[in-house]
Amino acid sequence: GAVVSQHPSWVICKSGTSVKIECRSLDFQATTMFWYRQFPKQSLMLMATSNEGSKATYEQGVEKDKFLINHASLTLSTLTVTSAHPEDSSFYICSATGRGVAQPQHFGDGTRLSIL
Amino acid sequence: AQKITQTQPGMFVQEKEAVTLDCTYDTSDQSYGLFWYKQPSSGEMIFLIYQGSYDEQNATEGRYSLNFQKARKSANLVISASQLGDSAMYFCAMRNPGNQGGKLIFGQGTELSVKP
Image (cartoon, rainbow over all chains, first blue to last red):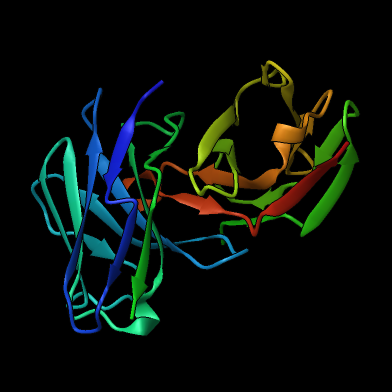
């Protein structure tokens, strides 16, 4: 099946640091990538939709300046958490998909972010 | 409004028995896709099974089958012959063509525990 690689898996850093998370589709060209945030025992919360070559579309309540998304190619999207604070600690997971309602989203393994 | 509802926060099943995880959905679209994902404690999201709104037969993938009742707007996941490795969170999701970029709408999830 399709493979999506997400790095890093774990990040522990000090408050005020900016953290970049990469999401790559390894064996297909993803027309759209999505970024989610997930709290323990809860569902995935969509943060933004990322299309190659265009600005990301953010969900209501998500700070665009805090969570910078860049989708430079059909295989790579990055999420940068700028000036991270302890409340940004969470599990972040990306997904990639092709066109069509029948296309499943293929997920990366997620990134556990801990801000001290 | 488009919505996915999973009413079972937690489920227990004895090893080797079958279990049904409930999912109901709400949409005014005629064309949509329904997906089930498994999320083990390690965090990755594993695609299990897909059902299209126009599919006349229930989808099956190995031990997974989807009990699709369109008139009732339900898409329950049936896992046969449960294994200890099936213990995980399970999410039902819907993709609609009108949703920007084909984003998935997730249910709240059901935590399945398989007992030996």
